[in-house]
Length: 102
Image 1 (tube, helix red, strand yellow):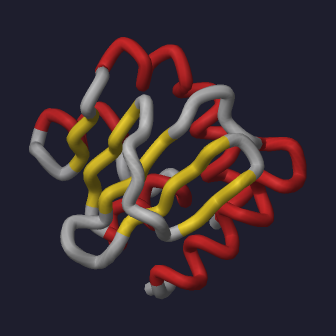
Image 2 (image 1 turned 90 degrees about the vertical axis):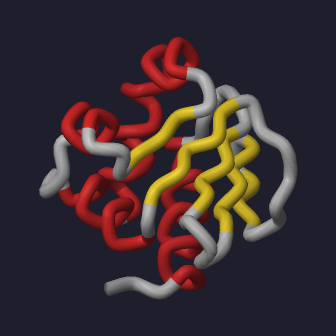
């Protein structure tokens, strides 16, 4: 499984390649750290964001690889979203970013 640093670097590279998001997103890895995305800028700073996604590091990796269904993950509590409407509007951008990051 990828470390926090490896995941951050992969997401940073994907965001730099033009797959950045139009809103700020914080990925809370349930006590294992955070990844904050603000356009092409990706850090591990725990700052406020328009959308906070709470997910374990293992589930984030599985989600990016297409091994975990996001709807099932939400229904079972493995994935939590601070703003469901915003998450759905960003879904294509998020999927494009994570598909490049794995």
